[in-house]
Length: 72
Image (cartoon, rainbow, N blue to C red):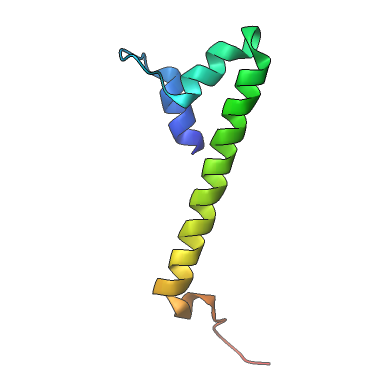
């Protein structure tokens, strides 16, 4: 998610709808509430992606959660 944010900020936008990273950077000085809202959306999306991937890993590879090596 951090890489996507940096890529959106670093690349020029040519479309009608800029990315969320570009929108946050342009709103920082003029509209702080919009910048905070965009940051909140970005963080919420990152957390949702992290947790959904963790859930998918638990479902698809259940052996990954079991410790290996010597037992107690």
